[in-house]
Image (cartoon, rainbow, N blue to C red; front, side, top):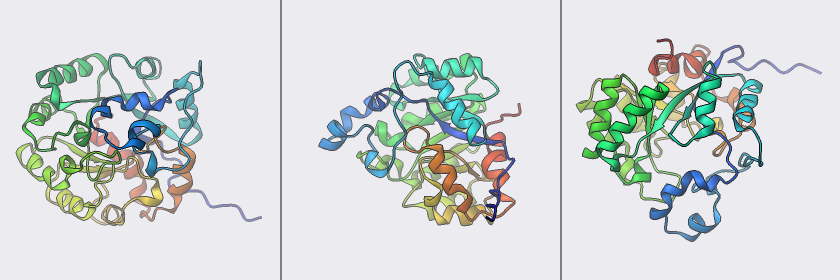
Length: 294
């Protein structure tokens, strides 16, 4: 039998810029959305608000299972060298992972712009305590537009701390209004904050052509592939990475929220990236944008 060829990225120590930890009840992660969810499926039936978009969700955690060990096992099996995980005061698994495995995990922190100056103080606290490498945010989840004045103190603090912000863009998976995540809103933010590193999360669809135009325009704007199986990476993004954007597209998975590593890595070899794009996409861009070598 003829041996299968090695994937084009073999030997690259992959850096995944979006990883979580399994929960016994996935819904608990998304309770903050309950006040703005209105349809019956989202409120009563789904285990997470974008469930209708995914097949074969990763298993929820069994009782008394070491969730950090589960994630490390997946990382080892699929060539993930390091992973960015969300940390907060009460998130025991993330705190334990950062403490005991600093060579494998680094932190981001989710910021709610509705919290005013408390959000800024929280960002500073998490940066000082856990060395967070990025802020993250979900404009549609908080119903605050990307260019809203409530975000500006957070953007300014990210500049001061020298960290990027990863921001959900495009039509959100959860059934909440999409207006806060229109890609056109990023234009004003990149103009006003040329020192801010802004990374689009979760697809930017259906405005991927516009996302590419804005990345061509603004040197501080990037794209990550979170929440998309590789077979669904937008063509505009793949084409951009293969031409002028090899340094602008970062790998992010969605384990264990909606995708298994088995699904991701089964699809990955079929992505038509040029050979020189793979190390940038899977590793080098993350190191540079997140300053992982500092």
